[in-house]
Image (cartoon, rainbow, N blue to C red; front, side, top):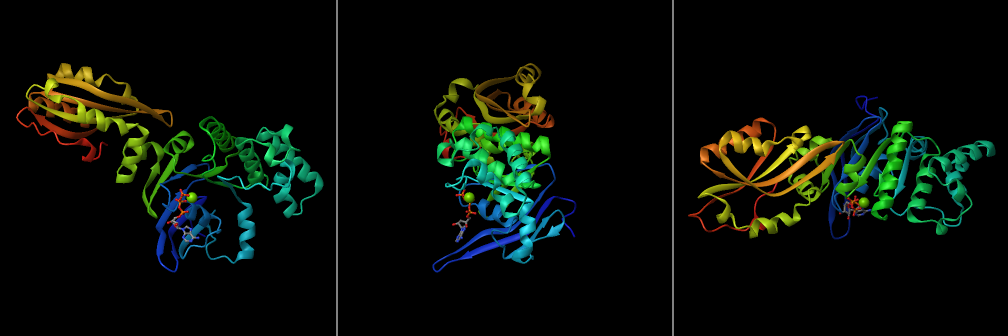
Length: 367
Ligand SMILES: Nc1ncnc2c1ncn2[C@@H]1O[C@H](COP(=O)(O)OP(=O)(O)OP(=O)(O)O)[C@@H](O)[C@H]1O
Ligand SMILES: [Mg+2]
């Protein structure tokens, strides 16, 4: 026994695919721990290794090395027949729903129970309960082809949970759905988490999805964990390049390059100035810092672009400013912000003597 009290712990997982012409290291020493009751997000771009990782959790994919602890037991070494019991404790849903087309909604949900040779009465009761939980009681006798995408995913969720697993693995479960349906499925997952204490591992390439319901997150980059932790910490203080890029996407900073490249800074500054990106976290996002800076430090501040995101009910504010005035005063003002736990990123120093403004599009990270 190990796994240090986590419901799920992956330790140093490695998985390499060897083909005739090339070798892909899909997982490189991946270690992740998930606590009971977490909605743990795994985010990364296409090919990052997310599906390989999640498939290792129920041994659909055997890692080359490393350990997978489920409730303290290392299952990576178990023979196939002993995995059956473990798999009952881990449900899974997919992007393409994977329903049996020739069977009704009822029979799709009943399928795992029939496999376990449960009694007719028990099957009837459990399927009835699941239909009610996912809101499809009136669709019991429909076939999958008669359902919308969101309804199909609800059937898949009911089927995954009818055996009462402790953990639900969700591999891009909302990626084939429109934004509104995505929200309704995410709300259902959140409700299942709160109501039944279901632990969820949620794989997505979309920041917007992870942001909505996860409490913790791991960022996967080319088979490696770039960073992991409490969602709010990771997104409000991104460290790795890939996470910074994702946070830029979250704040819709794609347009800011254009604005920065085309703004006439010369008109704003008094001889010298800085273009700065500020990230205000938590209640700080609401504070009137800018007015305070102007009053206290005798600096002039122009706001170029601003945006607030709410993550785990707490705001993160992103603000692009031009600060100008006496250099020492501007620096003191920025130091003050740093002391208040505001992330300060100086993007460019600008002076009227220096007419070469360069190009922001090829510049440093905005965050
Ligand atoms: N069975 C396999 N055989 C060979 N290579 C594989 C296999 N499965 C995955 N890979 C490779 O491993 C890498 C990771 O794939 P994986 O499917 O885990 O990525 P992903 O993050 O889930 O991507 P996506 O977001 O597109 O689903 C990719 O380079 C992929 O081509
Ligand atoms: Mg995948």
